[in-house]
Length: 208
Image (cartoon, rainbow, N blue to C red; front, side, top):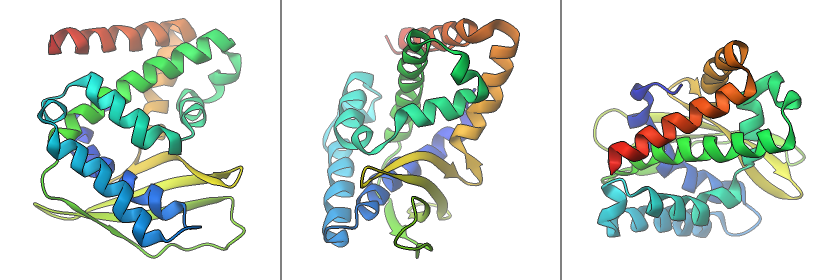
């Protein structure tokens, strides 16, 4: 499972994700999009004390509205599950996505509570106009040392979608893939689903 040490780094990814999504949709004025999307996320966090206190319901609403439309979450989940994804039934795939989403949202809820006055700087992006997959690099500046973040995006029907995030040298999907593979190897796909569900329930109980 995701190390607790990654949670502070995800504070930066929350900020950077909103910015890179705007940058990725460069068909329109990129500066305006960057300002609009990143400001929406930051303003929502700063204006709502319940989000900063870890209100998962509010976090889910924020993520669904501002982030999920720009994420290929099926690919993200499938990549995290790895070669076992094709062995899963449609129902198992749906449950994996549902539980994985809750897990990530709860992780983000901890990160969002740490948002203060950070700013996001986009790095020059390499690649051609016809590229279907790109890596966008950002740097988060605020208190402490700058945090370098990389994002993997793919072009889906003319729209850019994020499918992985690199935080301080750790690709999020790859990090989960290792632990997911071990769990499936020991207890099968249903075992992983149950493990994720148990972890999410435990986290919910701890918040109540």
